[in-house]
Length: 262
Image 1 (cartoon, rainbow, N blue to C red):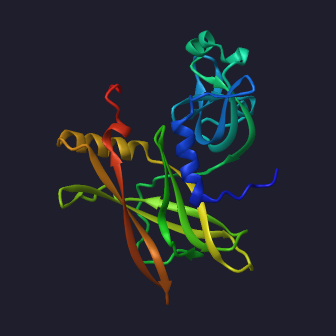
Image 2 (cartoon, rainbow, N blue to C red):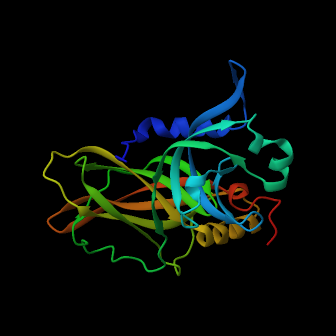
Image 3 (cartoon, rainbow, N blue to C red):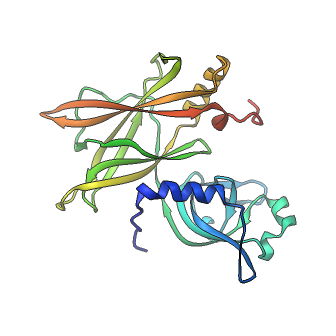
């Protein structure tokens, strides 16, 4: 299947509207259905021994998940029929997921937050500058932070992203805000001769332990949120890096809900 070119400038709104209305039914011609586009993380369910997709607001099952690796992140276009036999209320209570029909599925590039900080003074091979490290924030789910990055790129150019931090670095305090530094960089994996234009990469970052440790420390001080400072290479000129930064606020309750035991 040909890769669909998602317009990430509007996709953020679509995803959140879908998440907010996930279980709101739409009656059309007697059908009780809902549909949309949403991001999710594949999880092996030990109760049903099936791969399911955790999404904002619930869990889905579809046969397409059967062969996927646990932890895979993807974006899907789905339809949910509440009146289908497999979505009977008793089965939902027993198994904990809705069965959906998927018309499109695409994996999202997933990266692990590295505890080995990249050399912030040296240009990486094939490194390219970033325009906006957080063009869109597409949520935090199962320890995964979904972000859309903006950069100048040709339509068929492909990148590899790097996110790292120094685990020995101290937390910054600015105007009562607790700030944790991470460093975002990207290199060109597949080059192109086409003219560069504003482009967007949707990426998934496994930040579970980083997030939970930060949230626990912040919670112990009585605060309800903290900030991740995304330091990024905004310009590369004459083998010299120019760094910028953009802060992302994270809510403690979204990372360690009160119902979670630790």
